[in-house]
Length: 245
Image (cartoon, rainbow, N blue to C red; front, top):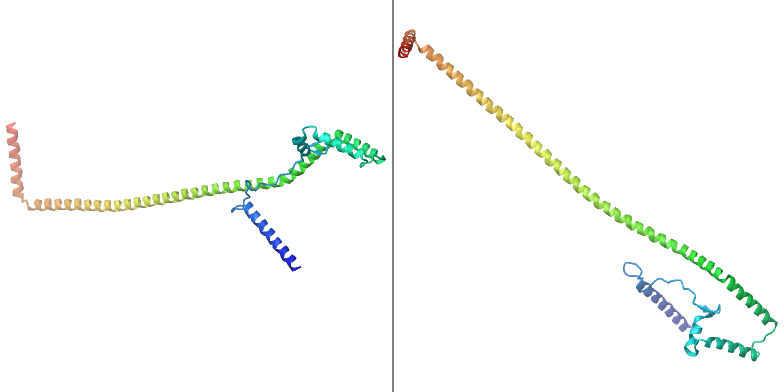
């Protein structure tokens, strides 16, 4: 009893480990499914049949050994053997089944293609409904990725705008600095011009005062006799000059 429990627990652990390994191997490190090595399951389609219910594989099996007529010969021979040996008894139920089989065959040939087309359409609609949610999820995720890329692009544009604003602020600071430097230059120049003009005015006033003082002192130093002699000498010089002409 204990050995059975131990074997069952070991088998459960092994199956769990196998499922975990398969799940881990089906997805890579990033969590994305490995579609190449582990493709998604695809809905299987029914194989080809003959006579409405006999699989095509049975005919292929006989074709490699008996040729084309082998499956039909085997079917007819088997039916003949069953009926001749009364293994299959043809009682009244047989004819009822035969009539039902004929009706089923007629219904399958008459309404079978339409019913198959309708069923295929329903299966496709159900599959499309199942896939629509997946496609919508994929579309929403793709839109989210595109929105994220757009947001990143806009964020890069914001960085460029911030850099441009910084450059604009630096240019404004440089313009304000140059304006204040010009104001300081003009103020210093105005004061220097004032000092120069003041010095020029003082020099002119000193020169005028000096000239007036010298003229007044010279005038005071000249006596009336000296003034008369100078006047006579001037008249004589004028007369001499006039006589020469």
